[in-house]
Amino acid sequence: MPTGRFGLIKVGGKDATVIGDDVKVGQAAPDFTVHTLDWSVKRGLADTAGKVRIIAAVPSLDTDVCDRETRRFNQEAAALSKDIVIEVISTDLPYTQKRWCGAAGVDQVMVLSDHMAAEFSEKYGVLIMERRICRRAVFVIGRDNKVAYAAYMPVLGDEPNYAEVIGAAKKALG
Image (tube, rainbow, N blue to C red; front, side, top):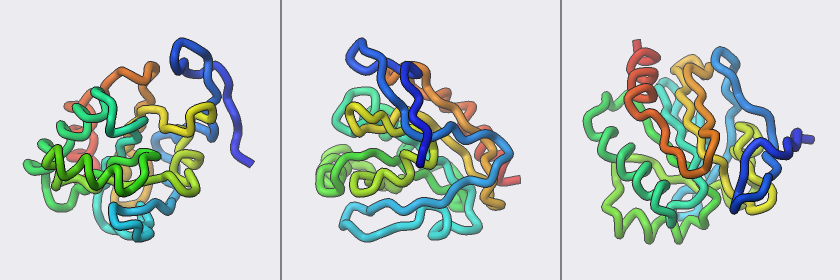
Protein backbone atom coordinates (compact mmCIF):
# COMPACT_ATOMS: atom_id res chain seq x y z
CA MET A 1 0.00 0.00 0.00
CA PRO A 2 1.49 3.38 -1.01
CA THR A 3 2.26 5.95 1.65
CA GLY A 4 -0.07 8.91 2.12
CA ARG A 5 1.62 12.18 3.10
CA PHE A 6 -0.67 14.97 4.29
CA GLY A 7 0.36 18.63 4.20
CA LEU A 8 3.19 18.23 1.70
CA ILE A 9 1.47 20.53 -0.79
CA LYS A 10 -1.53 22.83 -0.87
CA VAL A 11 -4.34 22.65 -3.41
CA GLY A 12 -6.85 25.46 -3.50
CA GLY A 13 -5.21 26.91 -0.39
CA LYS A 14 -5.75 23.74 1.64
CA ASP A 15 -3.30 21.04 2.68
CA ALA A 16 -3.56 17.96 0.49
CA THR A 17 -2.46 14.33 0.66
CA VAL A 18 0.22 13.04 -1.71
CA ILE A 19 0.09 9.30 -2.33
CA GLY A 20 3.39 7.47 -2.83
CA ASP A 21 6.98 8.14 -1.85
CA ASP A 22 9.30 10.50 -3.69
CA VAL A 23 11.80 8.84 -5.99
CA LYS A 24 15.43 9.70 -5.38
CA VAL A 25 18.44 10.20 -7.60
CA GLY A 26 20.41 6.96 -7.96
CA GLN A 27 17.53 4.58 -7.30
CA ALA A 28 16.12 2.23 -9.91
CA ALA A 29 13.22 4.01 -11.61
CA PRO A 30 9.94 2.15 -11.24
CA ASP A 31 8.36 1.11 -14.53
CA PHE A 32 4.70 1.95 -14.96
CA THR A 33 1.78 1.58 -17.31
CA VAL A 34 -0.11 4.55 -18.78
CA HIS A 35 -2.34 5.17 -21.80
CA THR A 36 -1.53 6.90 -25.08
CA LEU A 37 -3.83 9.35 -26.85
CA ASP A 38 -5.64 6.44 -28.54
CA TRP A 39 -6.06 4.52 -25.24
CA SER A 40 -3.29 2.04 -26.09
CA VAL A 41 -1.37 0.76 -23.08
CA LYS A 42 2.22 1.99 -22.86
CA ARG A 43 4.94 0.92 -20.46
CA GLY A 44 6.71 4.15 -19.64
CA LEU A 45 10.23 2.75 -19.32
CA ALA A 46 10.17 -0.65 -21.03
CA ASP A 47 8.75 0.82 -24.25
CA THR A 48 11.53 3.42 -24.37
CA ALA A 49 14.40 1.11 -23.37
CA GLY A 50 17.85 2.35 -24.37
CA LYS A 51 16.77 5.99 -24.30
CA VAL A 52 17.18 8.75 -21.75
CA ARG A 53 13.73 9.86 -20.59
CA ILE A 54 12.54 13.19 -19.31
CA ILE A 55 9.25 12.54 -17.52
CA ALA A 56 7.16 15.55 -16.55
CA ALA A 57 4.19 15.02 -14.22
CA VAL A 58 1.62 17.80 -14.61
CA PRO A 59 -1.77 18.40 -12.93
CA SER A 60 -3.78 19.07 -16.13
CA LEU A 61 -2.98 20.23 -19.65
CA ASP A 62 -6.00 22.55 -19.39
CA THR A 63 -4.20 24.83 -16.93
CA ASP A 64 -1.98 27.75 -17.92
CA VAL A 65 1.20 26.46 -16.27
CA CYS A 66 0.83 22.90 -17.62
CA ASP A 67 0.07 24.29 -21.07
CA ARG A 68 3.19 26.45 -20.95
CA GLU A 69 5.38 23.65 -19.56
CA THR A 70 4.28 21.08 -22.13
CA ARG A 71 4.73 23.53 -25.01
CA ARG A 72 8.21 24.39 -23.70
CA PHE A 73 9.22 20.72 -23.48
CA ASN A 74 7.80 20.19 -26.98
CA GLN A 75 9.99 23.03 -28.23
CA GLU A 76 13.06 21.70 -26.38
CA ALA A 77 12.47 18.18 -27.77
CA ALA A 78 12.95 19.38 -31.34
CA ALA A 79 16.55 20.36 -30.53
CA LEU A 80 17.48 17.26 -28.52
CA SER A 81 19.05 13.98 -29.58
CA LYS A 82 16.59 11.33 -30.76
CA ASP A 83 18.02 9.26 -27.88
CA ILE A 84 16.19 11.53 -25.43
CA VAL A 85 12.44 10.98 -25.08
CA ILE A 86 10.13 13.40 -23.28
CA GLU A 87 6.96 12.05 -21.69
CA VAL A 88 4.37 14.40 -20.18
CA ILE A 89 1.96 12.58 -17.88
CA SER A 90 -1.29 13.82 -16.37
CA THR A 91 -4.50 12.22 -15.17
CA ASP A 92 -6.42 13.94 -17.97
CA LEU A 93 -8.42 11.53 -20.13
CA PRO A 94 -6.65 10.52 -23.38
CA TYR A 95 -9.24 12.13 -25.64
CA THR A 96 -8.91 15.39 -23.70
CA GLN A 97 -5.14 15.17 -24.14
CA LYS A 98 -5.52 14.43 -27.86
CA ARG A 99 -7.75 17.48 -28.34
CA TRP A 100 -5.30 19.68 -26.40
CA CYS A 101 -2.26 18.40 -28.36
CA GLY A 102 -4.02 19.08 -31.66
CA ALA A 103 -4.99 22.61 -30.65
CA ALA A 104 -1.52 23.33 -29.20
CA GLY A 105 0.45 21.77 -32.06
CA VAL A 106 2.33 19.54 -29.63
CA ASP A 107 3.92 16.68 -31.55
CA GLN A 108 7.47 16.24 -30.24
CA VAL A 109 6.67 14.91 -26.76
CA MET A 110 4.64 11.86 -25.74
CA VAL A 111 1.58 13.01 -23.84
CA LEU A 112 0.32 10.15 -21.69
CA SER A 113 -2.63 9.55 -19.38
CA ASP A 114 -2.44 8.08 -15.90
CA HIS A 115 -6.20 8.37 -15.50
CA MET A 116 -7.15 4.70 -15.21
CA ALA A 117 -4.91 3.28 -12.49
CA ALA A 118 -2.73 6.21 -11.39
CA GLU A 119 0.13 3.70 -11.34
CA PHE A 120 2.78 6.21 -12.42
CA SER A 121 1.42 8.81 -10.00
CA GLU A 122 1.61 6.48 -7.01
CA LYS A 123 5.02 4.98 -7.89
CA TYR A 124 6.60 8.43 -8.36
CA GLY A 125 4.92 10.09 -5.37
CA VAL A 126 2.89 12.64 -7.32
CA LEU A 127 -0.77 11.61 -6.85
CA ILE A 128 -2.77 14.26 -5.00
CA MET A 129 -5.54 12.21 -3.44
CA GLU A 130 -8.14 14.93 -2.92
CA ARG A 131 -8.21 15.96 -6.60
CA ARG A 132 -6.79 12.82 -8.28
CA ILE A 133 -4.28 14.94 -10.17
CA CYS A 134 -0.50 14.85 -10.37
CA ARG A 135 1.72 17.04 -8.29
CA ARG A 136 4.11 18.85 -10.64
CA ALA A 137 7.48 17.09 -10.86
CA VAL A 138 10.17 16.28 -13.42
CA PHE A 139 12.42 13.24 -13.61
CA VAL A 140 15.32 12.23 -15.82
CA ILE A 141 15.76 8.49 -16.17
CA GLY A 142 19.01 7.23 -17.69
CA ARG A 143 19.46 4.43 -20.21
CA ASP A 144 20.29 2.23 -17.20
CA ASN A 145 16.79 2.89 -15.78
CA LYS A 146 18.21 4.78 -12.80
CA VAL A 147 16.88 8.14 -11.68
CA ALA A 148 19.45 10.73 -12.78
CA TYR A 149 17.38 13.78 -11.74
CA ALA A 150 14.25 14.35 -9.67
CA ALA A 151 12.59 17.67 -8.86
CA TYR A 152 9.24 18.07 -7.11
CA MET A 153 7.80 21.57 -7.37
CA PRO A 154 6.82 22.86 -3.91
CA VAL A 155 3.82 24.73 -5.35
CA LEU A 156 1.55 23.45 -8.13
CA GLY A 157 2.01 26.68 -10.11
CA ASP A 158 5.83 26.54 -10.11
CA GLU A 159 7.51 25.60 -13.38
CA PRO A 160 10.57 23.36 -13.45
CA ASN A 161 14.07 24.66 -14.11
CA TYR A 162 14.15 23.75 -17.80
CA ALA A 163 17.89 24.35 -18.26
CA GLU A 164 18.64 22.08 -15.29
CA VAL A 165 16.36 19.32 -16.63
CA ILE A 166 17.79 19.48 -20.16
CA GLY A 167 21.33 19.57 -18.75
CA ALA A 168 20.64 16.47 -16.63
CA ALA A 169 19.25 14.64 -19.67
CA LYS A 170 22.28 15.50 -21.80
CA LYS A 171 24.59 14.41 -18.97
CA ALA A 172 22.70 11.09 -18.65
CA LEU A 173 23.08 10.63 -22.40
CA GLY A 174 26.84 10.62 -21.88
